[in-house]
Length: 69
Image (cartoon, rainbow, N blue to C red; front, side, top):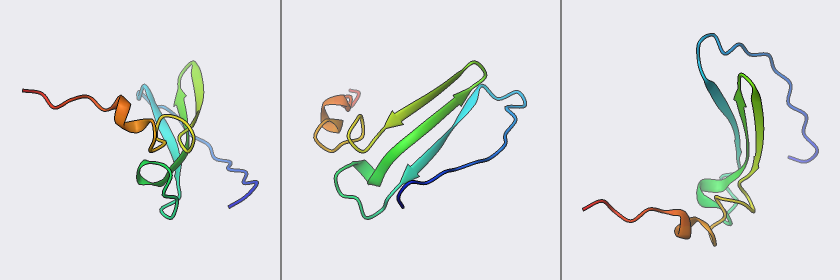
């Protein structure tokens, strides 16, 4: 995809929020092909770059917690 516009309506209806996530299963540079996400809450909208951000394969291992003993 390129230059995509996504339009939809939603109601939280008691929920604290939800995420809309865009993935590309062929992209090998980010965990599970994550590209970007938009997090919706009642008073906030957050846009995240997963392709070059927190899901990028070079930075993801440093964010992973060690196993619990």
